[in-house]
Length: 354
Length: 261
Image (tube, rainbow over all chains, first blue to last red; front, side):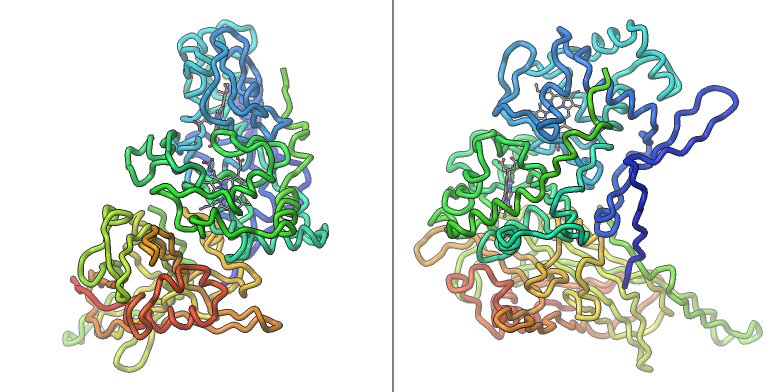
């Protein structure tokens, strides 16, 4: 039982193949360049059949992602709360919308979204595709507080957007469906798979003693036992893309998945975040309650709190957790930081084109 | 519902028995595929989505518990005829009881209709339990199904989780995870294949046969080892003796249910 692994050796991020027709304009199909480890170990990326990637679609999506035109007063773009320097997250605990109102959840980093094969987006999983997810912030009253009618009318009235939509989708009639398709295409290209730990797995880097003990703590069922929810070297998304209550609160206020599904068994469950790029994505948890990784590790080690839906994987809850030694904590942190990729933040393909 | 890849479907050689056209006595035999339907119960009462986290069970040791998860892997469904000839697609299926994923499985092989002894492996035997090689198990809807390399790598056989009332009357999580037994106190780590060969019994396979495979989850806690959740609530993966006990208890967990044609 073996897989043939075809490892791509192309070094450019995107592989463009040209196909032109004589009449009319055909957008240029693009295939995601699949990182070697993902290609070997994971399922293929999920690209919706009604939204194939094209060079023109991705470029348009990037322009829209960084353009405040989508907000009611032209002050806020997606990138305002999803800053590339913060791995497309927000360094604030709660992002602030155009009316100066704070939200109630921490912004989420954006990468490897095409490998979320469960296609559940937001902390509570309420959006079932990237396209549907992108519908929300534009009209959310405490975010961009716009209407789609207004947003598309403004785009339509610009000098350049109708032509860009025409190149990407063959029509210059701008709709919310096409806007969200373009943005989703750009988001699918945000791939992060070149951290120190990835290089270690590929035999291109070595871990320090502290980092190697850290991965052992992470993988040890009697110590960290993080791998049951946050992936492992053979599952290098470093998330399971599913929902748990990891013991933050005795009383659940934000219902998370349960608020969306209505199922009391799911009250207080949130999507496990990927542990990639933690160096840039503080603060942590759905409500940004922890400023540092030390606080996160202390939470799992001795700060667990019982509530009815707490995940059975959370051990020794009555004692607050398994009480890691100070050395194990420091090593676990050192390992977690090997999952961050400095080059991701500054990847020239992802920066503001406007 | 995600179907797991049938790696060998294409490679399966179809045994077609063709007869001389003038021989009326033996009809032409078209090979058929067989469906397996996995059902789950606690000593006879069905376990369905609505029972998770709500229905209270009592195990053989007298502990009150609820279930939050039963996910398990079966592989190598094998059909052996009276001549001792066996048919095995060599594929696998990951059942998620609560999410109702893959409750029906069609092994990627077609066999001539007839009488067979049907068997399968609970988990992966050592031949199949190869680290990292199955992308759809590295990335299941529940995340990774893998076993850390320090415990020998490969894949989980089962994750059965829930909550029980411990002897201080505290609701406590338990994680009953079955994997290949491993002893890390030796170098290299000692491994013992604790996957479970399950023989369901004799089944007549026709054109359109569905075989019910029943799991009685209470059996995991019963026999021959009466499970004490207070003593062994979890951290069973690196516990060699616990894995042997799980494997022994698993021998009576599965049975043949209804066969429909």
